[in-house]
Amino acid sequence: MPDIIQLLPDNIANQIAAGEVIQRPASAVKELLENAIDAGGTEIRLIIAEAGKSLIQVIDNGRGMSETDARMAFERHATSKIRHIEDLFRIRTMGFRGEALASIAAVSQVELKTRRAEDEIGTAIEIENSAVRRQEPVAAPVGTSIAMKNLFFNVPARRNFLKSHPAEMRHIIEEFTRVALAFPAIFFSLHHNGQEMMHLEKGSLKQRILQVLGSTHNAKLVAVQENTDYLNIYGFVGKPEAAKKTRGDQYFFVNSRYIRSAYLNHAVMSAYREMIPSDSFPLYTLFIDLDPAHVDINVHPTKQEIKFEDEKVVYAFVQAAVKHALAQFSVTPTLDFDLDPHIQGLDAVSKPVTEEKRAEAASGRLYEAFSKKNQAHLIEPENKSELKHWREFYEGPPSGGGVESGGAVGMAGDPAVAFAGARTAGVVQPVEGAELQQLMNTYIVTPTNRGFVLVHQQSAHERVVYERLAAAAAGKGIAAQQSMFPVTLQLSPQDAALLSDLQPDLLSLGYQIEPFGKNAFIVQGTPADLPQGNEAGAVEGLLEQFKHFTSEIKFSRREKLLRSMAWQQAVKPGAALDQSEMRALVDGLFACEQPNVTPSGQPTYIEFRKEYVEKLFGK
Ligand code: ADP
Ligand code: MG
Image (cartoon, rainbow, N blue to C red; front, top):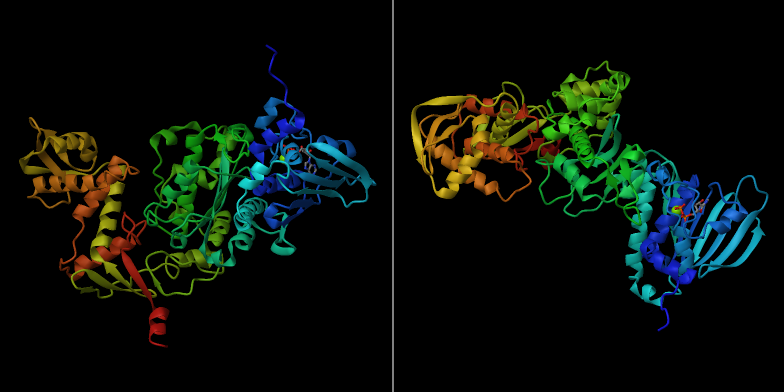
């Protein structure tokens, strides 16, 4: 029998390898744009015909290539970006695998024109099936133009897999958008079939976001910015009310590289917890910059997935930074970064590396956020750098007014005024001492600084109780009141098991419960502010409510208990309240960290602004 193994010819090997890197026109767009950025281009034009199936061309004004380099660039594993394996962990360029141009040359007809500033004359090269067809000197502007024509002309099976023009074009625009968002200091344009579809002038990140996502987003963005020793996070997140029912407009960039990460997405989502309904998606464009030594970007052929050395730390930072931004936007009086204690204990989080770094980091905002509570009201008006930060939150005109459920509205102008106004004009505040009116034994009409609000008594009280309990549980725990006549509680085996399980958490929440034989317990004490007399009923009700939450795995046990207790203790619709009870409830609500929604995200009040009411009357 003859031997049967053969080496594949280069062009076939390249075609196979191309399958990983170039799946569709959009993948080539990404690779070519990234090369133009790596070459230091400040103006990059993308020209497409027939959704990339007949032409994808990228023209840059970057550093160009020498004659030899221009030829070398199309070899497999040819790169100017790394030399040693360790370089992988110092990468500051978008590319490094040296595969893109080789792959492109294997599956399309390529025309390259390039010139370096120091060369009089440039180089033109034509390649097909991985082989050079023509090479000659050419007059060319400084920079590089690469045109790839008839993608997959030599791999009909793959060409047949391409989707309709609109579908492929959608992918191209998506890639273009990601790259354009990551580099606002670079001019980009996109032409399709001879028409300019996008024209993005150089500018700030915010300007770029508005250029790309639409200027209607202006009033909806909240700045995120936290700098630490370990990483910097910056960018913008959408205000809760701008959240949409469909995913989209969610971008993460790590060292300027767009990445997909369900894990980090979860970190952002959890920062919005209680602010948006669970089935809606906030928009965000967030950048994480950190030492490349702490990430592995070589875990995926198109580099859209990466691995963090310490994923948990990054998660915690992202979550805290977004929470911080959102909290400042809604001008809440206190902040609670309820980090996992494990994470809080990590060195990277708990202590800066050196004394010098410590001083530096201690002046950084995130460090403060991690190390103390009560952020917002600690900001002194004379602290200029913080004020600069505040200005961002108050950028843009106040929204048009109208019916709003919860939330504050930004103010334009002088940051000092904005700060001073934050607690008065910018935020809805009940008028002190004004007479309150209960309607239908359910709603409380409350005059405010800019109109009135209709408070839902149960929802509002749920919020007030929840925050009080959460604060107490995070601190010394909730005081228990010893029962004069301890009652016993006989439970089903399932409920008994559940209660045993919850016992330690319940204790910190003010319930002293001890086992008392088979499936029985004795209630020695209940939270101090719970009316006495129905201890057994209270515990049973609590268990019932807790079971409601058990399907919601995302909450910790304590969180579920807190919510159950808040729900249980909240005044219900139908209860008549007197003036002082209403006053206590309304004042309590507006003193809350997050007054506008219940723990599960329903509105606690509806605001009627003066201008809006006037408009209704045609004034
Ligand atoms: P990688 O980007 O991973 O290095 P590529 O195959 O994309 O691999 O490119 C190979 C090499 O060609 C690059 O390392 C770079 O030196 C050169 N190159 C590619 N595109 C350009 C460009 N637009 N301008 C200048 N040099 C380029
Ligand atoms: Mg490349």
